[in-house]
Image (cartoon, rainbow, N blue to C red):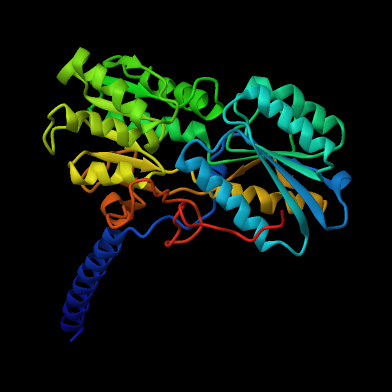
Length: 384
């Protein structure tokens, strides 16, 4: 009798294990995204730092200033919309949101910040066109008693209350490590960063090169700045294809804005689906659409413009006198085309599930403004 019970139990365990394994495999294949605390914060090897903002505490209503580097692409427009939406949400405590646009002119942005200070803002959000050029005026703002939150792009010094980011270091390293492993440690890379002197671009380049340097059989054929412009990226990559041809084994884009343009260049050069080298994308629906439609192995790791709204929320905490993180990380999902995971890079979501094939190419996927967000029709009733 005991033997019979043991056999039944063993069979039941075997069936249960098999069933659970099958369900787990199905669940794993769904890949509905990462929902935990920001991993860049959890994995940081350095102690987390906080800023005491008690000296900035004051009663509402508040005047919030935002000095923007530009709105010259859809990512930057989505970030602005995120800020406007957050300000509209808090009309009960925000009396006015004043927005300036430097059109990528550092001198104008310095004047913009000075103007915002003269207009008596209670707190200043700054996305710096050039890190070094904006550092002196941001430092002056802090010394004058106006707290500054850097968002997306920081200044060279640490003279700010908090920096809202998604970790450019992680972006650069992830993209590089994935390409290295897709190429099995041997091949030729072209690098297409954004804007020269902009902190996200420079940090991502440095982080990527720190990975590539560990693999002597990985060669960087060329690197050219694209100004986060898809047309410029297409032109640059077209010239690189003419120069290097099939020697190009991988494309490191620091954003999907130029990533889509780079894939377009290969398509225009006659490359058939499945023959275009692995590429990296971020943020832009068009980059993923191009990758999926042309069977390009792809890693997508967004740098969410939703950080604009997060910066507004953080500003209200500062003005309430709460301690805030020195580095405030927003979350992002690791998105990989099916079959293209590597030992180090595992997908939170599949690219085929994340892409919006029914939506415009210029849609920003991580705006935080909902699935119906359309930059062409968006409006927010924020206090002006």
